[in-house]
Image (cartoon, rainbow, N blue to C red; front, side):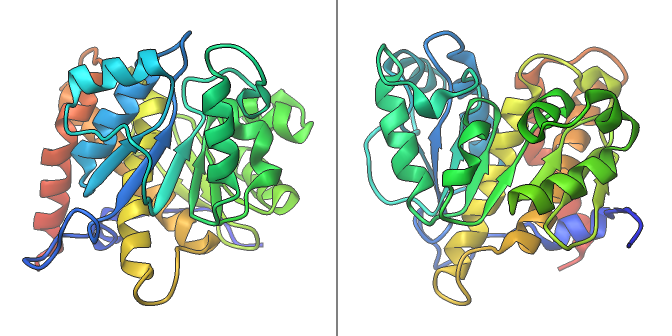
Amino acid sequence: MREPRTIATAEVAALLRVPGPHDDKYSRGVLGMITGSNRYPGAAVLGVEAALRTGVGMVRYLGPARAADLVLQRRPEAVTAEGRVQAWVLGSGMDAGAASVEEGPDAESTERMRAALASGHPLVIDAGALDAVGSARGPAIITPHARELARLTGSDLDGVLADPAGAARAAAEQLGVTVLLKGHATHVVAPGGPVLVARSATPWLATAGAGDALAGILGALVATHAAVGSANTGPPDLAHLARLGAAAAIVHGLAAQRASAGGPVTVLDVCAAVPATIAALLRGRGD
């Protein structure tokens, strides 16, 4: 069994897609997001903010009406009408079992989420959508923290915390998806693949909403790669999702370091630091 491997910033830089002169908003990638809820509408704002600042042609936000209003107040370039997408982010800021809600103000999001799960597009599955991972028809990466992973797989929480690499690997094999296990060190693994470890996070990043931003960053990376793949080799597979997941965690952590400068940080500060973080990674790429 291969030992976990820390992903290098050079690998992350190589995964960042820079638009060319002939790109448009569709060829750069359209990310669909069904996130947030009437109880936690801010999660939608944070995820959309992070995705747009990572670099994507369009974010199509299709969550609850209250969250959509807040998203548009913050990011008027977000689109709240249905249409084509190349990848989805599902479940951030939703309670467990969100894909099973039949009545109430969030029921429309449930129907849209079921359609996204069945679409065949690459999926980033977070928080309230984790229980629906078995319904995914496209390549999927799940983004649980340790408690969520233990619940999802029926594992012991102490065991997950003691061996996060092993727990992530076992979950990937059990569920047949790529697993991004969040933590101070984030562990990412596809079934049968190596465990990639991202270690860029500052302890100040342990704050509400940080996972929502990570899902947005990852969704943007997946959408840009799916847009390229649609004309070439197809959507990202599970191994490629693992590399993108590790890259997203590095960008997230480096942006938090930049925003924090050694002190407390808010998630919107982290989002605001993402473009400069990506620019610095691209400068290091040297192309």
